[in-house]
Image (cartoon, rainbow, N blue to C red; front, top):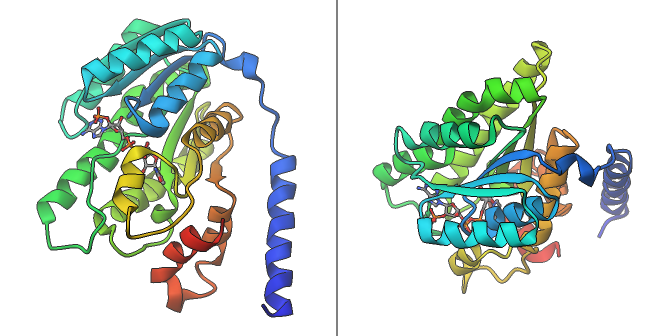
Length: 287
Ligand code: NDP
């Protein structure tokens, strides 16, 4: 590797660590009794987010489509120390369920301190085959429902000086093959909530928005998709979940987890000719 590139990478690491070390401290006690709504919490990262909030003694509402699984997750939340753990089933592709879910949480918890938007609809890991309907459906689930829920919860978050946490992906920063519809929904999230961050700041709003950029995480659904296609070591969902919670609690604008996603994002404009394959390269080799 050329000396210049080594120097460049070392500088980025130093800059990243400096930002990390100067980031505001996390006070776990601040989450005791916090009123939280977590979407996509029946499995994967959302489930782990719910368990961490439970350990901190929060009051939690979880949602996803499968009621039976939600019931089991909420029981475990109570056993881990949640002050409250309620669930409501909802399909985020529906026009009305996003509002219904937020209304339920506002009514049961008396307001919200955190809205963690994390759910995604299932999408194949394959070349785009022209399925416009699937792309439209995925936009509803992965993007429009986020916008709808955020708007519904905004007044309450304003009153509580609360936080909106958006779980996004490195694929929302740089496109890669085999995930065109998914990538589009994550780009849309980053664009919309990035703009909203500026607008809320201009309005001197009390609400913070944290956008979380994740790399490959070891959830069952992600592992199933890449099996036999990408041989990459994933990062643990429980650690990703904890980082997401801390980012929201400390009101930081962004999270990059793992750290290599930060470098990927920084470097995407330096080598534009390789952009298409770069994401896969980093997933496989930057471990
Ligand atoms: P999972 O597929 O494990 O979980 C998705 C969750 O969304 C489940 O709880 C599922 O529950 C729910 N869900 C699916 N469809 C709907 C729907 N129509 N309406 C309501 N809820 C729905 O996802 P991950 O945990 O892997 O990912 C979580 C987040 O992290 C996502 O935003 C993802 O983009 C992001 N991320 C994940 C990465 C990874 O490698 N895992 C990498 C980068 C980002 P149910 O089936 O019961 O509805």
